Image (cartoon, rainbow, N blue to C red; front, side):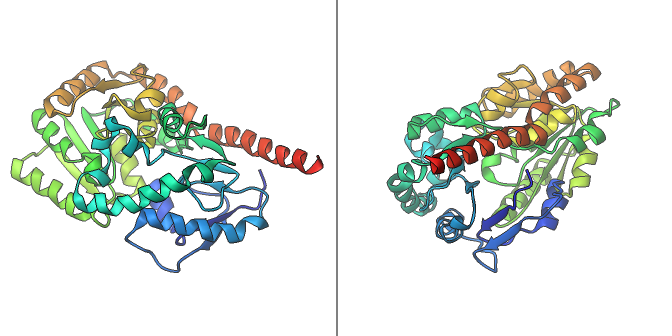
Length: 358
């Protein structure tokens, strides 16, 4: 929209890494105001509060402020893209098993001060903000926790390269892929157990490895060796190009994280002509696959159960499905995101102008 855009961040963005790993290429790199000249590898959720004070000093220089990390801020922003209310994991019992902050005494103690700050500040932080969110699933959680309505604007998914390099391929192997950072909540290790049950299928496990994820990646690697599973390959920190090459060989995408708020990798799978097999929960199920209209869902995390659904997906996949999947993926494209955000920004600036006149 030809605005002068700046980013207030905790640390400077490594745009080269963004391009290499995600394939995201911006026409113009925005000006950044990093709070720290170095990377803090601990206390991630608490760093967000520091961004609040950082932003307050910059906000009066700009016509519009947008909170993109979604957590509470000391200074309310004009627009908040609230991916998912963290307090929902505490207030909704059904979500508690899926929060790492409630799985051990250490993480529980780490999380409690943050929870108390959120509970104290959350309504004030969002009181003057237009709330956007990433799925109908997240919208319901926001309504329950905040008592506020929100507007669903799906995140921008860079689908064109997936369509061009993967979606046009019709000659594919009996292969399946899961793409997720190596982290316990992503359940990467389950793919190894599933692969053991389907020796005729080739499986690819792709994901970034960093910080505490190194230990989990090593666990997955040892599990593969201990179970002697030959038909699964692990690709830690694979480049975007390697990821595209692997996807183009596959027919099925396996997603193993429950209650995910949206799930961009599922959109990328559709754009590549893959048939997703996912848990019947979260935004990936309610919004992207439209309750099974564009993929297959499973209800429990027993490997034998998921393996049966994967076999079903291979039977269902055909060249005609590729067109259906690609058409569905366009609903979540970067272009659609731009169109929707343009309406929001225009509406907000017009309301500011009207308020000034009156």
